[in-house]
Image: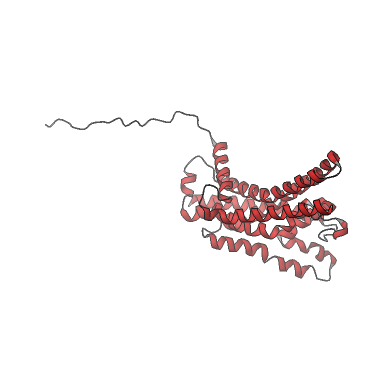
Length: 294
C-alpha cells in the first residue's frame, strides 16, 4: 500500500478575535456610506458633478442674498423663504440622489449580500432614508448658515442683533428639516420600486411636478374651503402650508403676502404631512421585507 503523500500547510488563516461592533455600528456604516454616495464622495468625478453643482448654486444664491442685505440693509429673503425658493432644485436633487441610494443596489443584486449579514431589513431602509434626509437638510441648511454668518457680522446691533438672527435661523433650519423629511420619504419610496435609475428619477419628478396642476385647479373652484385645502394635493405646497401655519411671519412677512392662504386649516396640513411621511416610511419598510424574501 502506498504511503499517504498529503501535506497540511499552515497558510496563516486565523479566526477573528477582535470586537464585534454589532447592529448599531452596521447601521452607522450604512448611513455614512449612503451620505457619501449622495454627494459622490469616494466615487468617480462624473458622480460628483450634479450634486456639487446644486450645492454650488444654492451657496451662490445664499451669498448673493447676504451681499445684497449687507449693502441695502434690508432682508431680501428670510431663512425659511430660502428653502421655498430652492424647492425646484431640491426636487431634481432628490430625483438623482434617491436612485443612487437604492436603485443601484436593486439592479446589481447585492441586497442578498447585505441581508446575509446581521443587518435587519428595516435597518437598511431606514439608514438609506436617514442618509437622504441628512443630505437634503445639509443642502438647505448650509446656505442658511452662510446667510446667518453674513448677517451676524454686518448687524449694527452687536450681540443683540446676532441673537435675533439666531432666533430667526433656528426656525429656518427646522423648516428645512421638514422639507428634507417629506421629500426624502416620497423620493426614496418611488426609487425603491425599480432598479433602473432613469425610471426612478422620472417617477420622482412626475410625483412632485404632476401634482402641481391639481393644486391650481382646486384653488380656483368657487368653494373657499376647497381653495384653502387645495394645497394638500402637492408635496411642495403641503410643506409650504405647514410652514405658513407653524412659522407665520418668519416664513413670509405680512407685507409680502403672508404665505399660502390655508385659512384655519393649518393643523390639517400638519396632520397630513405626518401621515404622508409615516405612510411612505411604512411602505418603504414593507417593500424591503418583500425584496429580502425573494
